Length: 425
Image (cartoon, rainbow, N blue to C red; front, top):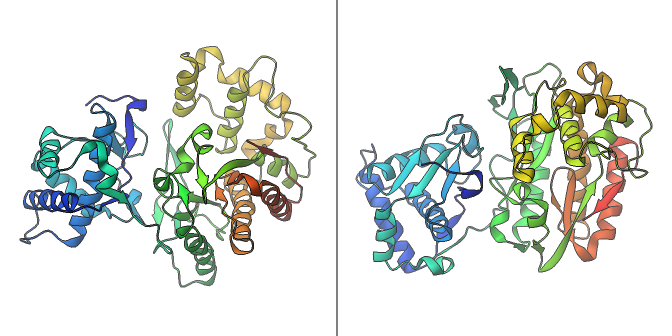
C-alpha cells in the first residue's frame, strides 16, 4: 500500500455509532474481529465494541472521501497514553480485523506519527460490502456516526517525558515517565489543565472533530534539577486543529462566531533576548526578512536551531519536505544550510552562543507555555471567553480580539519581563 503525504488522514478514533443501522454494523464487525482475535472469552468486551465503532467509523469516512486514501497512526504504546481507546484494545482489534479480512494494514517503519513512518490502515472490499448490507449509506455517514462528547476531565492531563537523545541523524523521543499526581505541584498543574477541559467541554467548536481535550506535555523529566519547568506546552490530543495549516484554522468557529489567530511574533527569539538581557524589538522590523533568503527558509532555520541543543549540520526531513511541497525544489541545493546559518547569525548575533547557552529549548518552551496557558485560563475563568492555544498563538472569536490581545500581552510580560509584539491573522 503505497501512499503519498497528501493522500492519507489521521486515525483519530473519535466517532461513535448513533443510528440503529450503525449499531448493528458495529455489533457484526465486533463479533467477527473478536472471533478472529486471540481472546478466550466467547463474546466481545464493551471496550472492544467501543474501539470497533471508532475504528470502522474512521475507515468508512476515509473511504467515502476517496477510496484510494488510507489512515495512519502510530502503533507505539506511548501514543495511546490518556486516549479514549487504549493500546491493548486497539492492537487486539487491528489483529482481529486483519484476520477477518476487513482491514488491510501496512506496518510503520519508525513508530512515529509521520506519514510514511506510522502504520497505515485501509478498509477492504469486505468491510465496505458489510456496511452496505447493514444499511450504511456512505454519502450520509453523519447520520450513522457522530463525534464523541468532549470530556470535562481526563485521567492523565500531564505527560512527562525523559530527555530525548540523538541516534545517528535521528532525534529519539524521551521515554514516558509516570506522573505522581499525589505531589502538590503535579496536582496543581493537572487541575489547571482539567479546568480548561471542563470549560471547553461546553464550548461550541466547529468543526467539532478538531478538538477533544487538552493535556500538557513536559520534557526532560529525568534530568537533574527538573521541577516541572521544561517544555510544558498545552496540546490538543490527537490530530487536532493544532496540526492544521493556518488557512484551515482560520475557517473555524467558536460559539458560532468567526475567529482570528493572535500570534506572538518571534516568541522564542524575544524570550531568549530578554533572558540574556539583550534588546530586541520584533515590532520594528520583520526578524526573518532577508534580501536573498526566503522568509520561511530563514524562519525555519531559527526554529530548528532553537528546538535543538546545537547547530544542525543538515536540514531536517520536515523542513526539506515542506520546502519541496511549496516549491517543488530541493532545499539543500537552493539554500545550503551552512550559508543560511551564516546569514541568520548576522541578523541575530544572540544565536552565536546558542550551543553553549544556559537558556535551552526546554526553558523557552516552558516560559512561552506559561504565558499562553495563563492567558487561556484567565480568559476562560473571568469573561468565559474561549481561546484555543496553538503554542505561540491563540485562536479567539473575532469580536474579542482586543480583550484577548490585552490579556496575552500582560501574561507574556509577567513571565518574560517584556511586552511582546503581536500579529493578528
